[in-house]
Amino acid sequence: MTQKDTNRYDDFDALVARHRRLIRGLCWWKAGGKAWLMSELIQEVTTQLWRYRHKLRPDATPGEEREWVRFHCRSVFAHSIRKEEREVEVVPLEEAALVAADEGSHAELLDRLAANLTHQEHRVLELILDDYTDGEIASLLRIGENEAKRLHDSIVNKMKQNANKK
Image (cartoon, rainbow, N blue to C red; front, side, top):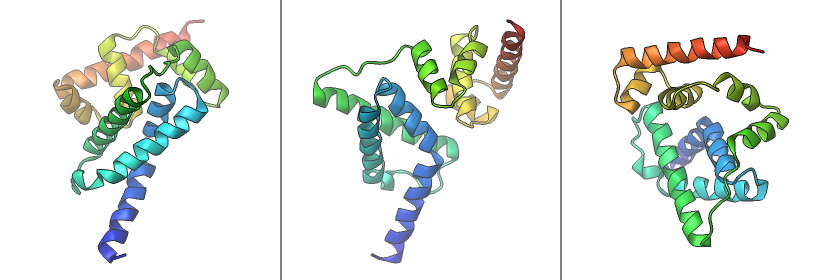
């Protein structure tokens, strides 16, 4: 193996490590909480990312990297459904939150806190949780940076209000 190939392999490991939570979360959601299916999806996603790693620009921003990973996850999910000629059962959000809470996460609390957010605020919250900055969110959603900041503040205020409710 040449030095260039070794570097590319190390870069790939770092890429997968950076987006591990995103990959696992999307696969868990798509698998409907079924561990065996989630494991298969993660393997397929990782294989596809490896196969198309040369298509990701070396100077890609973290936001572009995340979108590239999401794109390939969706591609694998669509292919998996067509290949097996079945729909993957998607767990309702409430049940997913309970299962995730059992696994030590704070998903149930997050669901309660985000209960009265608008559709746009939910999209922004998802991006915030994926470590996007307000500027990156503005760019991805094609809105102004001030609007992204306003939505971010609105989310924080609504979540504070929900936290104070019994």
